Length: 141
Image: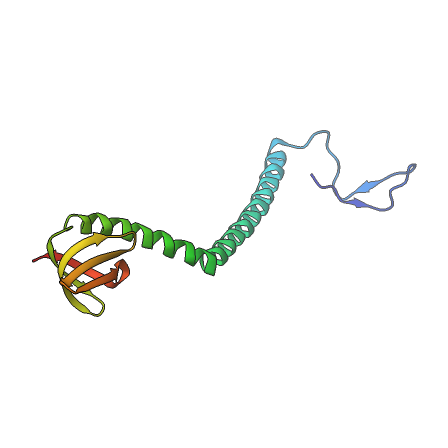
């Protein structure tokens, strides 16, 4: 509780208060003082929490938009897609297939599924190695 004093405070002498001092503050006064202090503390905690949130958001934004993280995500997605496509293409091994690619449709016998490519025998003298990233669809013919 704050008490405002009038006059000079000395080791000896009288001190005059704005209000007459009572023996003990009333319960209502104590409750109000505690309420004010709790509100002030809550506001300080709230401000600090907002500062921390802003810092976390800033750091996450900085990390998520960094080239290093973009490379990590790109690699992870490519590997996931490669694994799924490798399993799918494996079902068509040694069968006649049609592949839709970024350069057009390729038809032939799927003779090999590599780590990141498929090998398609178009004719007895033509073997095509097609990267997974260039294939948009595969189907049996």
